[in-house]
Length: 225
Image (cartoon, rainbow, N blue to C red):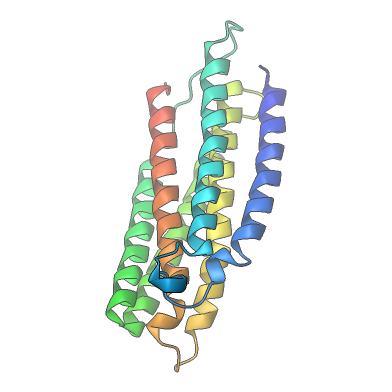
């Protein structure tokens, strides 16, 4: 594998991300009503929104699995050009920010179940701000790597940019849907139940992206200088 693989992989990641976010922002995330719908005859049925989300997460997991496999394969090749990265310390702060974003989304989810509309807004706002701060922190980490002389021509750096960029793009997609949910929460007449499905699914997605980042961060830490 060469550095060109990283560019091809990120292009594929962008295409897949675009298709999946398009799917996410149509029906699954915008389904109204309670998430625990029942079918005819009283039989419990799984909402299409929830099925769509889990399929999406399975596909994303496969995508990141391929990237991580490629990372280890490229690192193990005897080209003599793999130089481990000295990871920026800001990544620790970024990890904490993403964790707080997930906590905020969980708080919004709990408030929805208790019917506390104002607290739903507070939880969503906190989650969105922490997520945005995480993305800014990732750009800061890129800037620090670039200032240290780690450019795309270095295989380890190329994979770092690839992994963090694809993860960041998925979080951006989540923030887009978060923004649509916040718009729905703006009218004073809105009740928590009106956004229950969106908040429930957003929370699952947020927790999933936190887990993905923890895995990526562990991989990068275990192979850093």
